[in-house]
Every structure is written in C-alpha cells, then in structure tokens.
Length: 321
Image (cartoon, helix red, strand yellow):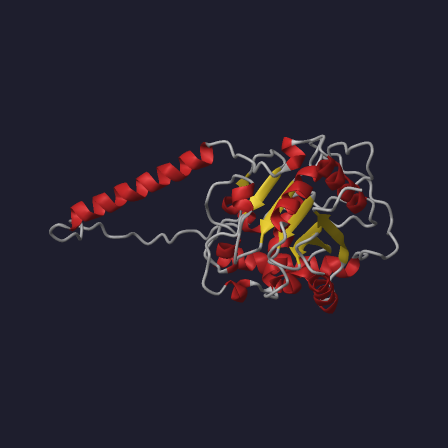
C-alpha cells in the first residue's frame, strides 16, 4: 500500500510547486499557451480552456519490486484440519459469487437520476440556467480546473446541482470531467449518477487501496467519471487531510479538463473549509426558500476565513419573474 502513498506525496509536492509558479484567479493572465494537438475542439460559443497539463498516474507507472528469487519449499500436504477444507471451499464459492454479482452490476448501463435536467430535459429553463453558470466559469481568467461545490445547510440539493453542472461542462463531447465525492458522511453521487458500488476516496485516503484507476467509475455520461466516497467510516473527518487530498488532485488533474469536488455542507462540519484552499475555486449552492440568509452569510464567512476563492453561487428554486 506504500506505493500509492508515495505517489500522492510526490504529486502533492509537484502540485504545490506548480501552483506557486502559476497565476491565481484574479491575477493578470500569463503568456498564451498554444493548444495541445491532442485537445478536442471546444464549443464555438465559449472561451477556450487554458493549458492542458497531461500527467501520467504515478501510482500506475512506478515499477513493482522484483519478487525474491529464493525458492519456497513445496509443502508435502495442505495445512487443513478435519472439516476445514469444506468450509474454505464454501467461503471461496461465496467470494466468487459476490465478485460475479459486482461484475454484473458494473456491466449494467448506469441510469442517471431523473432530476438531472441537463440530460433528461435539455430544453428546460433550468438547463439553460446551468449553461449560463458554465459560461460564467469558462469566462474566468484563468479558468478554474478544480472546483469544490458545497452548501450552507443540509437542506440544499448540492449534489443534484453539482451533477447538472458537470453534465453541462461536457455537452458536445469536447471535455472530460471527473467528479470526486468528498462527502464521506452522507455520499449521494453514486446513486445520482447510477454507478456501481466499489472502492473510492476513503480507501485512498486511509491507505487501503493501491490502485487509483480501480477507484474511478463510469457514469451514465461517457465524458463524466466518478471517484465515489467509498466505504463509510466512523470518523471520516480524520481522513480529510489537505496535503493527501492535494496529492489525489495532482495525480488526476492531467487526465481531465475539470475536476469537481462535492464537500459536506458547512453547517456542522469543517470538511469543505479544509479542502477549499486546495482547489482553484468554490461554488456555493443555495436553495431559495430553504436556506436562511444567516446560514448563507455564515457559509460565505467560513469560506472567507479559510482563504477560499469563492467563484459564485448557484441559487435553486428561484421564483419565476
């Protein structure tokens, strides 16, 4: 398991060095970067996304240590006591059956939640509003590549808004987006995006997984992938470490045009405030009629104290004028 941790550490150090050298949001733009020959054409009505920074997954590229050449003496007979052989065979059969069920679930086409209007109702008024949010993000200079989405209270439909925004960003097939479910307390994105159950972010942060690629799940959109929350733990706050999370971003940023992170609401836990400085910007989701003005103001204050870059807010359920 040490391989992935070493890769995360190196990626975090490289990412921090690169962020110190590059301009931040609001600074004067640097020299224009020529488009990559591997970059697909962008939507003609929107600004170009800046430099693409390809980076291979360090965890996948590191060479495995060579196995020891010392010969292992063959056992003259298996070490199995009376009655244990049958139990072992039954346990193995159960494991094979569970593995077969998991593979069957993965083979099923993911079904997107009906509340994802960008896919199910592409001409709806709400879809056009999400497209307006997309245009606002792409108009920023530099364009934020990693975005954290959070809310002021638990009443707000944060993950539905996040998924709709991600689906908007890949319209036309010109971009790839990764969603990271960092809400380790009440994850919902795997259900919304119809992905199979499997390892995810918690296993990576807890050093229980050595394969980053195995934690990436496909969704109902060919251009949107999901790194789910993973196994629910008793104390998820202990895993939210900025440097480790920065390493996860560093390993994945070169593979996607955008990475969108779902963080728990700011009402009771500090996870979003801890992770916010590690991304390029934060979007706050506010559900009109549910969130009070004081809750929203408090959320903005917390993000400001964390030195997060608040890009703006998505207001849901606004009355029609």
